[in-house]
Image 1 (cartoon, rainbow, N blue to C red):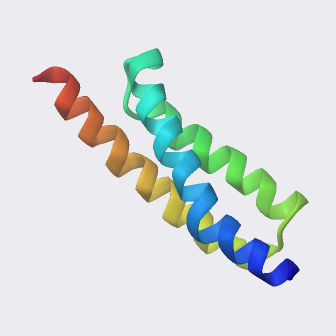
Image 2: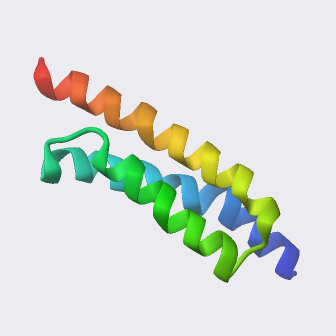
Length: 79
């Protein structure tokens, strides 16, 4: 049961949180790099406090996802 919750957290809940935070962050800070940087810092801290070192690949994936969403929103914002 706990394995399924970790699976849902990594593949669905965290990416949704990253996407929503990236969209809101571009409107709040007006800079595309703030939320990806915060995403990297927060998930790196979570890697060593809650998860283990194998979670770091997901830190990279979530950071890249945040960069993509932030740049897309910046592009849309400037239209």
